[in-house]
Length: 95
Image (cartoon, rainbow, N blue to C red; front, side):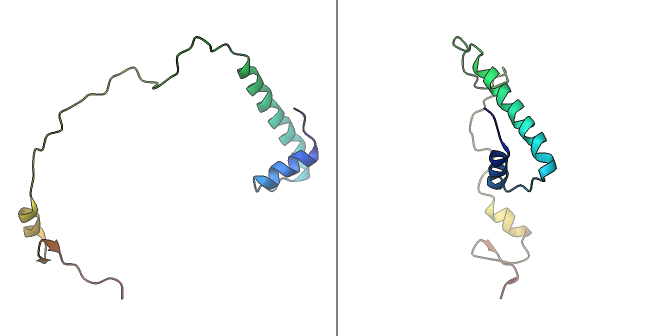
């Protein structure tokens, strides 16, 4: 795919980039190189390659989902400077 200055100006406008005229040629070269590389990737034979789910081969360690500590409301309310009906009371911050 070839690019001209109008295409580069449209791309930079869509990307909301200010691209000085002296850098447009370098930008055209860079985009052309990226697209050539993508075209090379299309030529790779991946017909017999399984999809990659994870880059790690380790299994996740599983543990039982068990409740080890529960209903600590009474103990937690003892730490509060002030509480009402099981809720912390804090000073009003917004008027």
